[in-house]
Amino acid sequence: MGPYSSILTKQQSFFRTEKTKNLTYRIDALEKLRSKIKANEQPLMDALRADLNKSEFDAYTTEIMIVLEEIKFAINHLQSWAKPRKVKTPITHIGSKSYIYPEPYGVTLIIAPWNYPFQLAVAPLIGAIAAGNCAVIKPSELTPTTSEVFAKLISEIYPEEYITVVQGGVETSQALLEEKFDYIFFTGSVSVGKVIMGAAAKNLTPVTLELGGKSPCIVHEDANLKLAAKRIAWGKFVNAGQTCVAPDYLYLHKSIKAPFLQFFQEAIKDLYGEALENRNFTRIVSEKHFQRLSSFLDNGKLFIGGNTNKKRLQIEPTVLTEITWEHPVMQDEIFGPILPVLEYESIDDVIKGIENHPKPLALYLFSEGESIQKKVLNQVSFGGGCLNDTVYHLGSPHLPFGGVGTSGIGSYHGKGSFYTFSHEKSILKQTTKFDLPFRYPNVKDGLTKIKKFIK
Image (cartoon, rainbow, N blue to C red; front, side):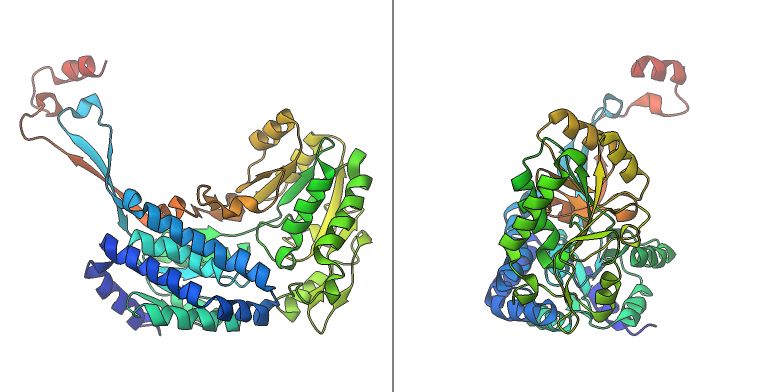
């Protein structure tokens, strides 16, 4: 018996009462979540400021607004998602009808990261509730103020046997993973993702893993350079680069490298001013992460930025040029406001470079040419992404969000969240008005009849 066995037992018992399967109950639970978040917007923004120095604008748009929209979308569509779907029946099954019944898994575990500590705890929870599950949520210990506000908020709207928050560090996650959950949803690093999957394998527990990797951003020679610079600067430096789908490195076509970098420098200045003097520029989450990022600043040639404030754990938007795949900054996901630049002449070299490394979570291509767009989309495997933008695909409830290969397993958002937390039960409803004789072994010339029938 682990320290969390009693919570699990309580939730299993509550799930068996069938209450969470009731559509009205689920919609009511989502409505409560929405109004509670709205009532706590200020405390949440204050907590995100305390943990990561997020501005109110960033905290609202990237953490609060995005989940309010997800909840609204789920409430509006839940009835159609949850009802059994009638599907076609083949001629061999004449007389019968076929249905798919979505059903909840049961008791789910959601492990959330620190970079968007509110959004990435609530977004999967919306799916878990919508699908009719119970949930245990483990928020990040690296953002303690937000985790505390979140835990309080959840405890005020839901009974522990339905949805509860468990706080703590790595040992808490390990103890939770020893329990037998019906589903595990994890957002975080590739290395921890492997640990989660290993623990889940012991109980054959299904998982969704939202991981990361080095997401490339390609600027081709025919791109709208000024707009590309602005959109890339925003996508890279929002949350000080601590975004799983942030452009991790830039591939610039040789012919436009100089003008693009000029536009990029202007875009950074325009968006963030002097970042280290800007009270709204997000800080790095911990000293350990700050040290790791600082060690990359001498890679290649420092082209933009490079200044840091150790006391405030801030690193200004930085661009490194003359970078190759051998530099330390190109070995793992950066997860900070440092952008290395590679250059290319042929798009085939770019594709080769990306394909020699693990499949990324996102890819961004800036080009007006349809043939280049087609070529990159057809040849490169990645989770999802944008043409002529960055990060924005994440905000659409109509686009399932997730990785491929080492960047993740499974996806969510909108309808995707409902299906992630649902098992699809297939049912054949057979007629009793007649019985097809040739399915049985004692029918005369059975094989000949079957062969004739399926022609």
